[in-house]
Image 1 (cartoon, one colour):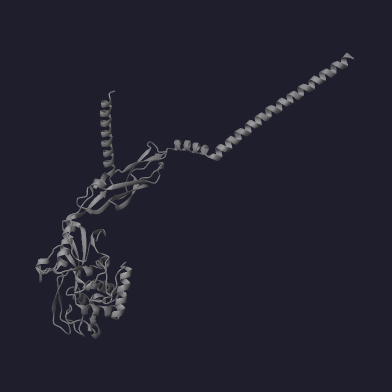
Image 2 (image 1 turned 60 degrees about the vertical axis):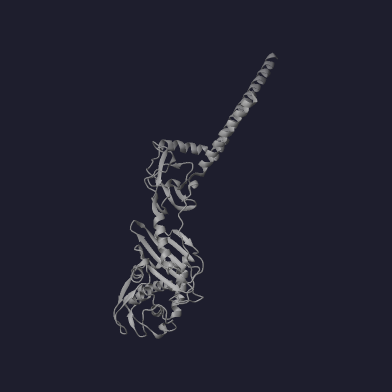
Length: 466
């Protein structure tokens, strides 16, 4: 073959091999080659967190474990302890509480207030509304004294409760949140505290109230309370209103910046229950907008637009077949998920990209009988390192045991045992030895008898001759 022709054939072969290698490499990449890129969300606050309360999945985070000052977000913890106290106290939320001089002492004149004075009496429920809506600092102290006997005892309870909830970077110095260098938290810890408070329906009701009437007391005529959370109220500034928002609490000091914790539900995505924590937001100089409201709303809109709950696995799916040993009329059984699996995922996620890893407990096959619903393995679903869950795989139908085959298998299994084989081999050897011994023994006896008879004949012939 000419040299030029050999080169041409070699070049074509090399090109084919390269193309094959490329195809194999692309096939090996699989779903990870189509990683999703979510649209960015602009957040300028020092710390921000967006979580789906139902699933506990974090959708967005920024500086969530960085030390920050909570300002009046502190009152969420105060409300939580007050509600736990009321649930254990016979008086409940309708018990009357009188404001003491000590509860009103050392509070700044320009701080948030409901204008409660010493000696004034109102219910614990009304005090909670005073604390949560206009963020009254004196109401926090009055509640703390009632629940624990003193402010110091209540603050100790706050820190104990925070530790019990898993808050690793939180320390409280007062019940209201006025600035103290030893009074700090993180966005993540505030999420843990708020999540616990949201378990109380009364807290949800109070924190989501825009306006509340306080009846006349022994010291004051009736008064109306208005929330400081402009996401749920258009009383002062309608520009921030967000109709999907529900509560929870604002906070603001010069050191803490503008803080806001809020939740939201969307009528089109009822499966999502979003909770946002924004700490250390600024006020825009040119527009005078408070960015804690703006960025919280932005987080909610971004979350609802880009995430949804999808069914990743259904109980009707046939996952794989498992071999059945000694099965009657079949040597296979179909495995299905024991339960369905739903997960909060990006809206654009293609379910074909979700990785499925199957593990069978009996790699050599399961021995009959197999009952319907019997767990024979498990399937793990994940995407780009995030595990969605591990679901048991069960038999979709039962398989009876073939008794004839079982007996044959039992016999075979018995004789396949080493000690049985060694015993049989030893017995065979013993039989051979015994037979050989008998043969040799009989042979020798015949020879001995033959020799004796021959000698007798010889002796008898000699006597006869004489």
